[in-house]
Image 1: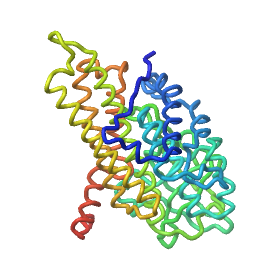
Image 2 (image 1 turned 135 degrees about the vertical axis):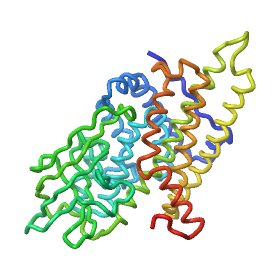
Image 3 (image 1 turned 180 degrees about the vertical axis):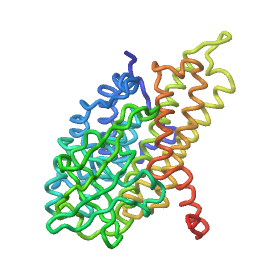
Image 4 (image 1 turned 120 degrees about the horizontal axis):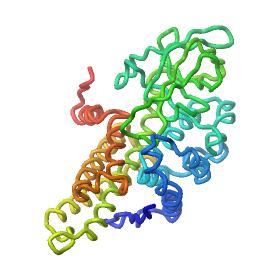
Length: 392
């Protein structure tokens, strides 16, 4: 079993910008990844299985909704701490980070932001510890980048509503106890609600045959005349503002997380290049190898600075959805490019499970698409630059 020897690249001494608490939190998650995730993740990815035994540890570390106040079971941390947590988890595996960021940003965040006091007290403490896991139902078979076209609907039936429709590409769906679901009411308004496992007509078939995020559980949400109590509906939020604010929170975590995957690929390639000898010297001594490594380190450093500044703005409640989109898009593109260059440095060994690079590369092919595709985020930035909406 390969030992996790990861050392974080920090060319611009960004650690000096972090508080002692933030560094302690990051280092705690890093130690957890090295001890409990790195030794097993390749096996689970090869078997396309989710390592459910890590849920308890993730909960104990506060990785589920760390920004949720302590009164509801969260850790009450700042957003840079949240970002650092996601960076370390995705350094281990994108699927693990997906599990945590879905739980925190797409399930706990909307319950905390839009839920009633009763909903917060009922769900958040159990979600924070991982006793309950959640998922987020927005994407549908016919509606991905255009969630406004969703077909999932519910009708009033007295003390409850009746929900019909389907969602797909849902992380955590196969084992989640609850789902935060977005659907249209009879007036055509988009509303959010909590659907619980065990409600008649609610099923979560698992998605098989994935080449990406193989250590993450993905499934569908199917609603066949599901009776949902009215007290499970978020009372005031209507329209796309609700789900899109959740996506902003998740995209923030992805911006940090994807860069973590890129950092892991760089660290792996750097160590390998120093050890691997060809033509009588380490391949790190060759100009083209150094060019690759120097460009990787430059892009990582730029991404770290971008993410840190975004974290400051998020802590001040000034980060805009467009700023978050830019960081998410940048980090995934940087990480994918680094993974591909790192794979070349490792040659044939780069495709084996002895090293994490090919697993990261395959995972990032999903990350570049979910929570807003690469092109959609480009258009969001384009709209900010020009003032013209290219979606219409």
